[in-house]
Image (tube, rainbow, N blue to C red; front, side, top):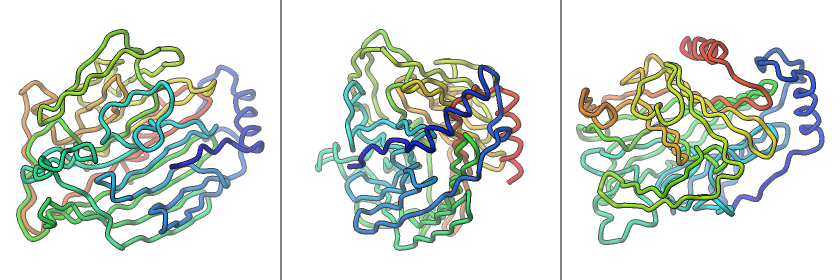
Length: 359
């Protein structure tokens, strides 16, 4: 659906120049001397997407077809043009997993909203079971604003039940920012209970999520079986681990699979894709409900922050049944950081978190 777009010569030269200058040193991207990138938004209503271009190359796209049960950002690409998100089910690539068809690019939803499952909904759900699932559809509101090395996309969405009734009105502002070898996506999403009280009961399926490319998964040496909140099992077979280099690290010093089910103000996922060293980091925000968030970060490629699923992620030690009275709102703020060609230290990420937490 999306054609792969390789880095043009200029960007490749920039990237290689940065690597040559930085060597093996751990360098913050804002220390590199670059001409400011230009971020553009290209609206393509017929294709139901808004493309985000950095210096003419595709970085990501806000994509909202009716077939995938919610709008997403897909794909997400690095400075060097590497796909950081899984291709399946929109554009399958050889050697990647084909589990969890609802895991597409980056999305924001939840597994229990007034008893409806928004997280697991997809075309894979049989028609006779659709009554238990909710869908997020875009409203007509789309606003674009370009500011040189930064651009803002503001969109509206409706969280609706199978009967067509709106439960939540969402207004989201995406901020796309390019700086040296660093790319940033801020998501500020405000959800408002519409016409009724809304209960978002404690559930492990949530909330701010990315499904990453095979190269950023943890190497796996055994078959695995995963079940969703409704008990539907998906077998995930052992795959070829060649080129699979992903590793999680949290602000609290947890690494690898230890990150799952722990709190933290940020988690970074590092790896190498086609020779390009990348780090994808999600930053929580102190004003978010449930801060510091629990991390629903799985080695098979699901990278998610879940501030509301505390019972499931704490083995019953904590519970948060989040409620919104009719007309009341809650705002969730997160930042995705993507560094290319350089290592990221805890010191650097703590500095990034401190800057983001002031916004």
